Length: 341
Ligand code: P6P
Image (cartoon, rainbow, N blue to C red; front, side, top):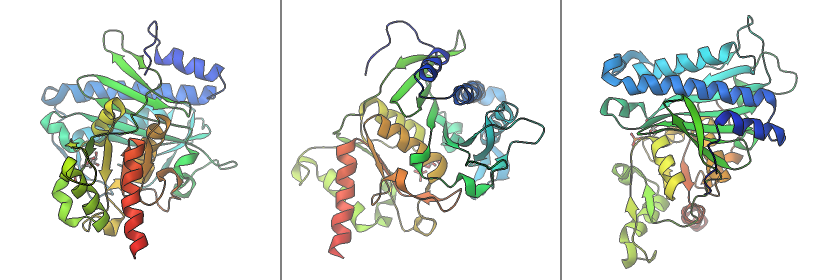
């Protein structure tokens, strides 16, 4: 990881990416709008009990989850910020049953924005880091009023992805397909400042992140994979492992971005009927783009995540992502199991 010589703002970074022909002016402006929305969300999250934003909203979403007040607030902030900008043709959210074309009263652009406005929101009331995850796709040629099916593009079609983690620092981690970079919010100035250009995730790791309470529900290859890690240097892996589980994907992934590791939410017999717990379009795919651009790997356990052909806006998938060699090991356990029939 290299540190910039003098502070580079997100705005300057994006202008440099545009000058390098990595992004269009429209995409630059879209990312700026999303970043500004994340600043607003960060302020709301930071108020906690003082802002009357804790607790349940008294409503539910398509996921069948009770919405937190901040889920709704974050969703509204992103909707309002992006409606009038003119960079989007439409947007889709974890908190909305269907995608939404930009209202006719506003100009439409050529991009589709998908987001989980506040991931890990069950942690809000206990003051644990949460975050916003977003993914940007191109609106298909000739489509002026996008519907759900126009979002069903594989992760390889993403033109940008990012997350903003609301923790001790508010940090935006972004890729536009040319590396993954971190920007820390300077609260005194109110702007995101480039703090790490070119994140590199270590290929090897001794740290895994999984909700071990689901162990008895896992598939056999997952049982064997984690079992061998728990045996440490007494087992076939020949080294000891550490475990972390924050139960906030953005926080767990940010740790992996910072020091390596493997994150997994595998199939278990509870979530298998739905295909997994985590959502492909606005959790797994954007995180996979960020991780791959940082030298890591991301898989369903049996397929490169970003090559999954989506079948639904809220489709769920098993997730393995992080240190490349460790993800490859997890995939090998699944391949060996499947080959044994
Ligand atoms: P569990 C948060 O609800 C989330 O979607 C991810 O952020 C997180 O990794 C996972 O679910 C936690 O799931 O079953 O451990 O509560």
